[in-house]
View 1 (cartoon, rainbow, N blue to C red):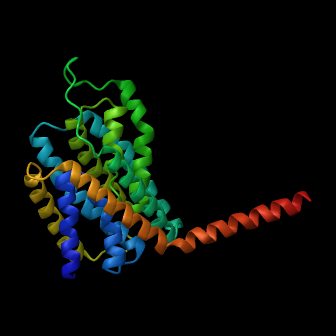
View 2 (view 1 turned 180 degrees about the vertical axis):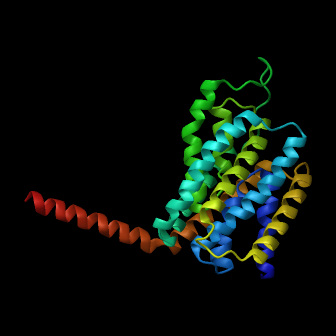
View 3 (view 1 turned 30 degrees about the horizontal axis):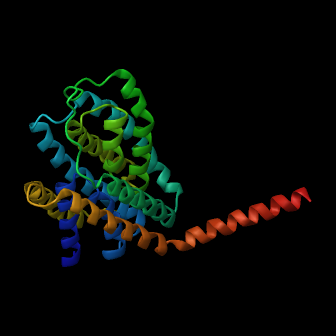
Length: 276
């Protein structure tokens, strides 16, 4: 494992610790374009890194009382089933197509982070945060759980940039609880995805273990630096980095886009010929 790979593992962990998410979407591009692993192998490796780092983060939030266990279990079980299905479905999808999907997810994550890169609004004077999550709110979260789970299994991302807003807006979960609950769900999600990939990819456990250890070290360091650096500036800067990474991955897999466009044009031509 190169020093560059270790340095980037530290960046992944620092971003998770400082920003609460986003760094996990970098792990697959790092494994593929920096460390030279094949796409499917890189996605399976990413699930281990993201799952282990999220477990450490979830444990820290759990000790602080910032995990809604009921929502986490309901959301997580649904997402786990979808994640396992996504991992099995990945066998039918080519590596370049998976990377193309990942590039789109990275760009969406960048846009999401840019939209959130603003000072948090002051607490409402109307009353305290909502502490009870209604059954209706949980039902609203089910489609999001399925979508996040499928993404985790297919492209190896945790999906925290989708889970946290969904918990807050649809589940009516207070933001502090949403972050810890999201990490708990991501851990469950990644575990199911890993099971789906076992037996279909070769896992270089030594490299994965070293990368994971450095990322966790970065996560712990990042949580201690939160009060020192500006989260708004960090979020903006990291969002720009994600957009650059997403654009790079799209460019690297432009042939998939070109082939899809050609196939679509051919089908339109055949359809028109059949109507003539």
